[in-house]
Image (cartoon, rainbow, N blue to C red; front, side):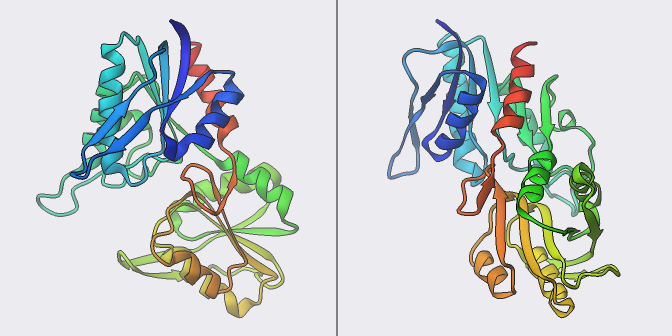
Length: 296
């Protein structure tokens, strides 16, 4: 039996292959068939290893969580000693508190579910607000929440002149500041008031936005409404350009079209979720964390 093997599903195969290549680990694919009634049939490779890394991003998570369970339990049955999950986008982390009576706190429930299946979990820029460490949600010694700030800063440095980074809300301040610190970029942070899932008000701080290449940076873009409102607020200042750069590109429905219509020139994202905007590879930071875990 080989010592280490990295497995992926077809929906995240290019990124998984890149990760395996950086790590120097063999890669193989889990075959997936979905029956008409929605059940999943999985076929694992015949030749496994003592340590198996499962690489899959958990956007559109409900089917994927069941398929991860089937995968991990089957790997154990086949004698795999150690199973590591690399999920560059981690689902169900936003609901970390019951805001109304009866609400289910999904963060810890899904976190314990993953901890029962895997020996380590590695993710990127997980949506953590009221906890400081991923291990508070996923009770494992190696529950690792990486940040994409370095590769995002490298991308900005390579593609923009005189950039000004804009965080769209107060929660983004520490994250935007860290990206800016890598190369000494200017940055500002807007104030956001959320009025509902699809309705937000964004207020810009005082700054010299005119003739600047402004990059609105955020961790997750789902409906894109916060990014959209920030872009609209910038228009009167006549910046040289407005771009968007996010860690996780969901961009539901017509979010891309609305951003483009609002004057956003470029939309970029990390490749944590396969998307047409993918521009920043996470393979190197994921590989370093994975190699550190493998050496333990």
